[in-house]
Length: 373
Image (cartoon, rainbow, N blue to C red):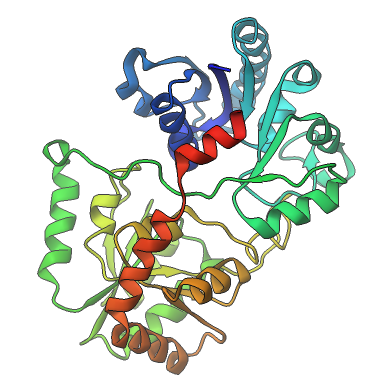
C-alpha cells in the first residue's frame, strides 16, 4: 500500500496533527494526495511531493460561508471519487469530513481519524437542536478499516459508545518534525524571541486559543503575586479575551499568532508550559473531551524539555504522574498555583530531562507502519 488520499474539510493550519501526518507519510515513502482548505498556502512547501486539491476557504460573511460549505461538499465528494480510482486507502481526519464524503466512503479502505472525543455528529451543521438530527457516523466507524484516536482512554470510550469490534489505534498528537529553518524566520518571530530572552524571570507560556473557559484569569492573578519571579506569556490569535487579560494584568505579555510549526521557535524560549483544560460541553464533542484531553501542546512543550503546569484532568494527570514532568492543580487558588510553580522550579532539571524522554518515547514512523501495514 503506497498511495494515500487524505481528506480534511478544515483549514490545514488549524490542525497540526494533520500536517504531521502528511510529513510522516511523505518521509515513509507513501504517495500522498490531500483534499483540504489551505488559505495560507502552507502546503506549498511540499511542492511535487504531494498532490494538493484545495477547497474554498471561508470568510466572515455568513451567507458566503454557507455557499462555500455547499460547494466544498460537492468538491469533496467528486474529488474523492476521482482520486480513489488511483489511491489505495482514504484517510479522513475529522468526524465532519466523514459526513461530507457520505455513503461513497463505505466503498473504500478507510482510516477514520478522530481529533476529538465525539458522541454524535449532526447531519446539518450550525442548526438548533443538532442532537435531534444525527449523522450515522457509528456505521462508518464500524465499517472503517481502522479508527485512530490520540489517547488511550478515548480509544476505549469510543469503542464502547459505538460498539466497535476492535479498539481504535492510538496515534498521539506529537509533532512529526520540530526542525525550523532559522534563516527563514519572520521579523515578528525574531522580535518575540528577543523579548523572551531579555526577560530574566521564569517564563510561563500558554499557547493556543483564547477562550474564557481556559480560565487564564486565575493563572494571571496568581502569577501577579510573584511577578518579580514569574511572568505569563500568551501566544495565539488575539481576540477580546486576550486583550482584556493584558489590560487587567500588566505582567501578561502577548506573543502574536505564528503559523505552526514556526511557533515552536518561540515555544523553546519559554521555561514552563501551561495547559489549562476544563470539562465543558462544546458542540457535538463529549463533555469528557477535556477530561481525557490529548493536546499537541503536551508534546510541543516536552520536545524542548519544558516542565508543565496543568489542571486536574486525567489526560494531563496520568502522563505527568507516569513521567514526572509536570504538576496539576486541583483548585484554582493562588496559593496552590504558586506552590506548584515553585515545585516545578525546585525540580526543574529532572522534569526537563523526563519531558524530553516522554517526547522521544513516541515513534511516528513506527506508528504509521503499524496503521498502514
